[in-house]
Image (cartoon, rainbow, N blue to C red):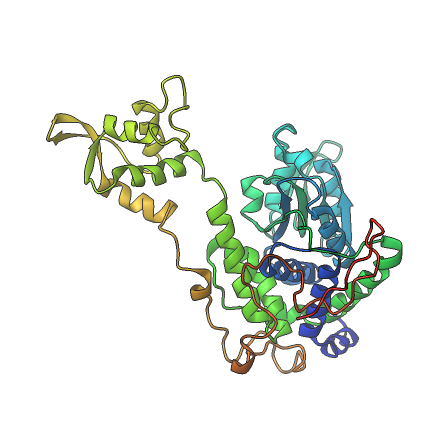
Length: 438
């Protein structure tokens, strides 16, 4: 990094720049809530500092049906990301080569219509899924044998990647992603039409400003240790985005942490668990207040749940043998026990306790109560490496209720990031009012 880049990065107010990015996105797209908007803005910014990251978070943009704005949001991401590489389909070998050309400065992979690659009728595509999973963490190359040179070739996989499509992506990808759940616009939600030739230069100007700001702070971001509200893989995924927020300062540090908690909670609550984990959770419900249950009674209670999969699992529903096999991986086994009705095989509540706490814990407190306080001072960027305008700053007490909030409001229409007026004509030619600012 040159001193010129460093000086130019210092001259940019990071918080103001992120506000401009958010305002531009909300001009053309209505996201489901402010948490989703914050995640998209920070993810786009993170693509400009890839050399600083140990993990490259994925961005998943999914919708239940067509015409929910997912492709338009991907247009915004493409217009402002670092070295975007857009495709609607790609072979694993093509993706490998695209990344391997410049592994120190990889492209940002953008995959639209991802449901045609990973959907229920698209096959498994295990090679591409493996590439996207491996590329989440630095230092996980693919190995290929080159018969011509009789040598093993290491192919880089580390790169930022965003996927847009209908329905859920594979669990292994969403587990490494900030997941944005788009929805169709309501009758009173208006956006401006986006045209690449006319509106693209504005996005490109923001791309250049983001690159100028963040390339001057790569060293500081590489050494950053932000306080994380999450753990394990979720923390790995969100750390780059929260580090960006801390670097920007203003209200972004707190807003980023609230968004991380909100979107992670949405994923935990909304996605179906695996069959073994679902069985664990349903057994907890079936036990009720009992300390032990005969196997047959436990099976009867599971199969009587009209919303559970157990009655339709095989011709006779879930069997004692199948249940035993599923629970054995959690070190839970049936034992012969004396019940009031006589001696029988059964299960004890205590044998489930450890697995329940690890794989399907009770719901956490509300997100609003769980957000950690942002430190009064941070060490993200040293005074020698950044000016006050670019360093992380605490949120003053008197600004706690200003623009950056992450409640699950109806959408981003009318958010504080809408200072630019909507053009007078919509795509259908009818007049539309300009969006009011908060």
